[in-house]
Length: 240
Image (cartoon, rainbow, N blue to C red):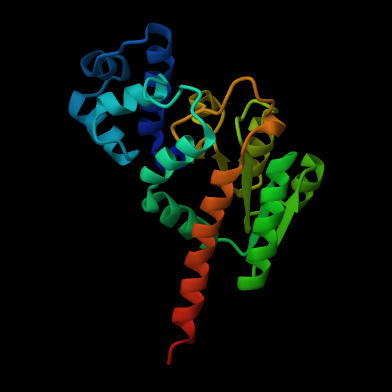
């Protein structure tokens, strides 16, 4: 799993990110010295920036935004895809998402089709084990009426291609709401429109499948691990 939260960056770091993304996607190759020149900073500043985003070095960051890290882009059988994804499961991403959920008393879960079913399941379990206001929704206008500074919007999308969520997430930011997109497939094009994304895998399902036909198995696995964090926290609170 990979979590890119551009919202944590300061103004200069955000400018670096935007510049590198734009130039790298045009040329395909962008050396760190050239990136530093374009951004008006030193190469060491670029290195510190990519480390802050969670990458071990500039090359891994560049591979990520250029989509070169998609080693599982082959049309793997579903069990193989799940096995590879679980082998690379990053609990740090779960911890980050869990901390984000804990900062808000109101949580709106949004998705279309089968992704909505995942959101509804998450809604039910969160209501049982927390005191939060939680609602699963598939109507954008309804979401907009519920957003405020005390609300976190969580969008579930398998591919990010069925429909754009950029306008909805922009509206959430205008309302000072938190917003995170959880994507099952490794569609780095989503970085163009979203500041905070969790990619659950570095793989793709078969291109021949329509979005509603694709598996949501990793959504449920991720949800269950997050829910276990809440259950463990509740158990700790009950200890004498």
